[in-house]
Image 1 (cartoon, helix red, strand yellow):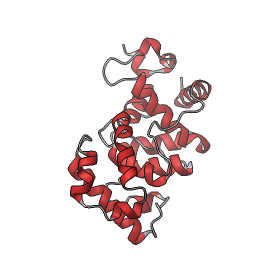
Image 2 (spheres, helix red, strand yellow):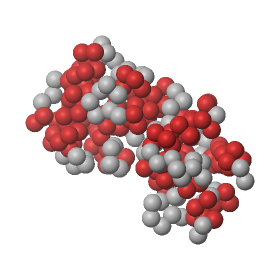
Image 3 (cartoon, one colour):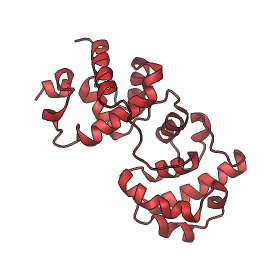
Image 4 (cartoon, one colour):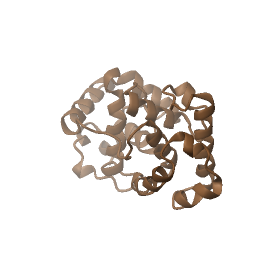
Amino acid sequence: MTRRQRYEFIIDYFQKNSPEAETELIYDNPYHLLVAVILSAQCTDKRVNITTPAIFEKYPTVEILSKATFDELFPLIKSISYPNNKTKHLIGMATKVVEDFNSKIPMTVAELVQLPGVGRKTANVITSVIDQQPNMAVDTHVFRVSKRLGLVPQTASTPLAVEKELVKNIPTALIHKAHHWLILHGRYICLARNPKCTKCGLSAVCCFFKKQ
């Protein structure tokens, strides 16, 4: 099977079985999503969704968050991984959005990565989820699943290399959705340890499964 055929099989599978795939983070607007994604680094979406309601109740807008102090915000996110850094990042992000972007969350990767706590992965999530831009966020799930399935060569050793390979081979109109397909597949089926290969509808074309 060629890589092109593998992509076609996998895309067809997800379109039939996960047509409405979307982020599991709960948000109402770009500001909410940006806060949630910053908090989600090395933390579960479930924990983030438990944490964010209190944040948004106290800081309903980016302007209000920009005026928060560390001591005020920290108690609300202390159950999240790396709370010290994330508290600083959230306040710094909000301040820069207010000062440099007229209090509107920017919607390009180049602008988003200027914000504290926002790297390329986070910027890709925001632009693909909010604006359906053809950007592929590569987290640990996407990195693992795309290599196991054989969507990218094993020599693709960095998230950026994997991102470029996926974007090159997935139809532009589906990239924003494919991001969720791969994340959710990695979260619930293609686990890092003890992947559920017997329950996976992609085992017929999976390079990892063939080696077992």
